[in-house]
Length: 144
Image (cartoon, rainbow, N blue to C red; front, side):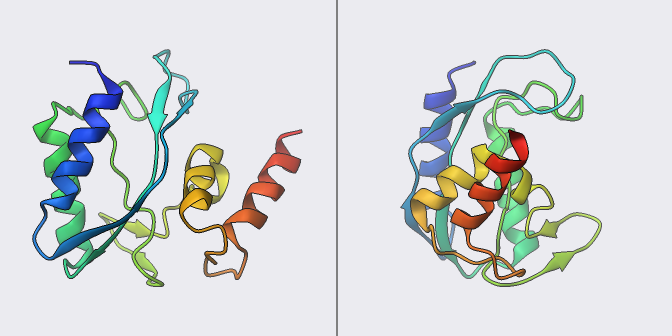
């Protein structure tokens, strides 16, 4: 199945049903060009904020299970996929292990992440004390 809006709606429903997890906010969905050299359709992106007592790797496992339920098969890096759920932030924690890096290592480089994140919380600061709005402004200047 390739219906990005349906898949995102289903992913949000699945997130809301995770144990000890509450949906706090959801951005609108925006279309973006794919990253990487693989020719593929545009992606529909958005951001949700949740409150959860799941530990970071438990949450990552849950996100990957939701992807799998929707037919995600990991074959080509940055290749076509039915759904891609990234753990961008986990409170103010910094995590760097073989399975998970938080904040997401490309968060500052992708308008399709920053813009929906700004919709939810434009004053959110990352570890470098830059707000999401400042990061968007800088990235737009760099892309000119």
